[in-house]
Length: 238
Length: 291
Ligand SMILES: Nc1ncnc2c1ncn2[C@@H]1O[C@H](COP(=O)(O)OP(=O)(O)O)[C@@H](O)[C@H]1O
Ligand SMILES: [Mg+2]
Image (cartoon, rainbow over all chains, first blue to last red; front, side, top):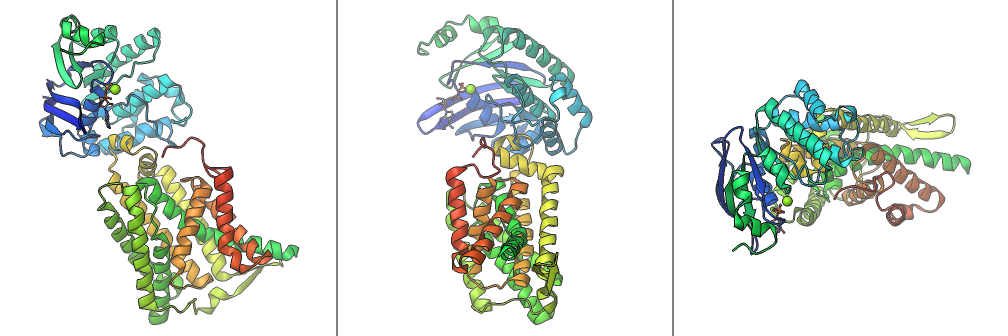
């Protein structure tokens, strides 16, 4: 298994942000993670990438126990993620961002791969620009994906990378993602609100509501589930 | 009068070079750890006293004592790092108390080992006067260490800009979590920043020992100066630190020449407050900067 989550629970004081979530992904799987705002999607990403420590539960990545692994070691093991709000580095150029990721996550600078990533994400013309100050929002989001790709991940977790894009921009980015997946053969875990996007990208979906996994399956199956529909229309999950 | 002002400007610039070494070390550690090392001035002082003992007991020229001083000061810096790394909660705040305490302990250790007497190098060459452009006076020690200081600041700048570990340091300073997700081990960058900060502190200490006089209570004043410069520079820009250091040196030196040496420390404080009120992100800082 690529990623194997068993009963992951994250509590912030009395708030159960993620409650007893169990699912698994095989290598190369594409899985959608959906649910209303505040459902715990980002927190689950944080638990997998190491930014928060689960209160309970087991997480394994390619058979290795994740819970006690520091963040940089997870990056080196092959977990890459983006942030919902882009986190560019001050004073590093776009290319330097990718080079640092490549150098420290893989132990060597893979210039060929970096050039390829810049090209795929259409960041080539901004390669030597300051990452924090000279990128438009779409380019910042592309750089988030690029930084993660430069670490040579086996699992790429995307946190609402398509949110805020125009329909045309969304289409283009989805196309890019398909290319990325094909080229690097990595597993994708995708948080996304837009049902159409998820349906196009992901053969399988898990739905969170109030931290709980309430449905799992094909998009068709899941988005016709009455409990999922209720959670999306703002009603309490029964 | 013009000559006097020109002379004090020149002396201020020369002091600025070793002030920059001290401030850069403080800024590096702050950048990677968000810790203000209040014992930083004592590390400088330790370097100065080791150089004194090496000269006094072993007959070593202060410059030749650098390897010994470097070893001991960097080792002490590592010990300070280790103690800070033991703090598990609220590191930014708790480290203030811890490093303040370490500073007090080091000051008292210096007092016990070396007594309260003031010292300066006894190698005459360092105090020999050089006259530049017919009017400007400097001691050899000031010129040597101003040059060394500028070279070292340049080297650290290059290292931060162009080396992999330098870039990793900047990445951690800019966004700690995002840097970790790029595979950077934050502890490694913290250790590096402490080691480099100890190295710079040592050179500054030997500079002070040869060009000025040393006494046990000096460390605290040096920490304050370094802090003022770092805030002037707007946290984390190397050229900014150098310019801030020269500015502080010049302001202090002009105050001593035109008013009174009793006001020297106050002048720096006034400069600090004026900049903080008028330009809160520093003289060279960016308006938009995290943390
Ligand atoms: N660090 C934190 N401390 C306290 N509460 C948090 C923290 N992070 C997230 N939460 C809470 O956890 C819940 C889930 O948040 P999040 O995972 O961001 O949801 P989603 O990404 O699905 O919109 C929310 O109620 C949020 O306020
Ligand atoms: Mg979220």
